[in-house]
Structure formats: C-alpha cells, structure tokens
Image (cartoon, rainbow, N blue to C red; front, side, top):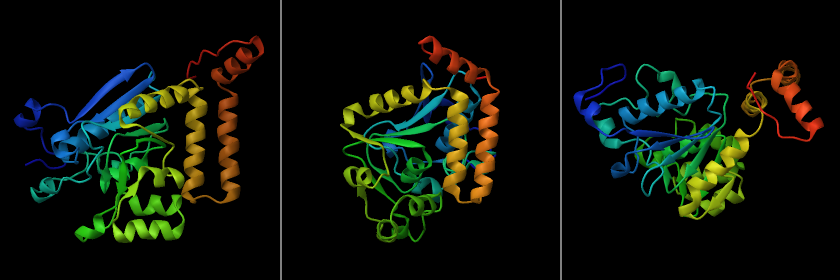
Length: 273
C-alpha cells in the first residue's frame, strides 16, 4: 500500500514509469503510462505526474508541455481499486498540487492536452486544467462522479461552469453523460479535433507554435488570462496587473530583441530574460 508522504516501495522501483517524459525541442511531452488501467490515476501516477510537471516548469529550455495518454484512453480518472486500497491520489508531499498532482498545480508555462481517447471523471478534469486541448475524433469527456455518489471535486464543476452555457454545464454535470469531441469543439471546450492517429503530432505542432513566441511574454499573458478567468480581481485590479506585467516585459532583453528583429526583418532569438 502507498500513501502520501510514504516511501517508494520496491515494487514501484521495479515497475515501468507511470509517466513518461520526452523532449521534442522546446516541447516536453508527458505521457500517462498505465494503459492496462486506461491510465487511471493511482498514487504513483499522481506523484510522477506532479513531479514531471514541476521539473518541466523548472527547466529554462522547456517552454510548453503536452499531456497525453498511452494506449486507447486518455485517462479514466481515479483508480477505484487504488482508492479501495487506501491510496491517496495526490502527489506525495504535495497535496496542494491537487488531484493527480496536476489539477491545482499552477505553472506559468502553457500546458496542452493531447486527448487520444476517452477522458472520464478526473481525466476530464485534467483536460480542463490544461490551457489548450487537441483531441481525437474518438475522444469523449464525462464527469460521471454523480453516478458514484460523488461530485467532480478536482475542478470539473468549477471549470465547466466557467466555460459552458449554464444549461449545458448543468446537463453534463448532473447526468454524468459523456460529451463527444464534435460537441466539445462546437462549444469551445477544445481547440482542435483531428483523427486519433494524428492527435499527438497535431498537439506538438501547436505547442511548437507557442514555444516559438517570446517565453516571458507567453508566461505573463497566461498569468493575466488566469487572473481574468478566475473573477477574483476587480476590473481596476486587473488593469493594475496588466500594467505591471507590461512594465516587466518592457524591461526585458526579449522585448528589445523582438523590436530589433522586427526592424531588421529577421526571426527573433529569445533568451528568456
């Protein structure tokens, strides 16, 4: 049995990683790697995903992350058998990162979901926690917690209510029925729908487009977007935050490089400073 804060067991040490990390230039691909369990979240996956996201955030050469799943499913949410074993589905030592070490793990760099198949419960909440989503035509999204006597407490209800019209959000949450990829795209829950065989490459391509922009500017823009979405600040406070972010960028080496590159008709070389 594993619990938050507990030592890594010998079985865990010998097992294949629950999260695989791959670098593709400035893009980091994080793959949920429990295909035999449809990538359901147990303690080990939560810990490895949280730690992988923290490592990505700390790496100055990594600018955008893509989260995907191994096998035919993106993520089936919480591993019910792990719950019954008494496992905690949070990263060990970092409960503040939220479910799967991810849903409340705030990083300034963009994070994309490459949804290769069905996402259920906590899997859908992982997608909602990402900044952008590229999804397979076969992908579905559901918050089925009400069918288990629970609620989508890892951000599903909160984030869905901010992204969908009230009646549609109510229907999805209160029935637990899945939403197909085409409907999710029509309502703006995802950015692209592509054939399943193309989903990862399409997501990496979009991530590379983001990574080509000035990293400090991207991060400052994400912070301001996040503050705007949260409705935690007044309009006056948001303008103050915008002015603060803009002033910080104006003093950066990247801002000067961007202006020079534009004037000289060349591509900028970003330093992240």
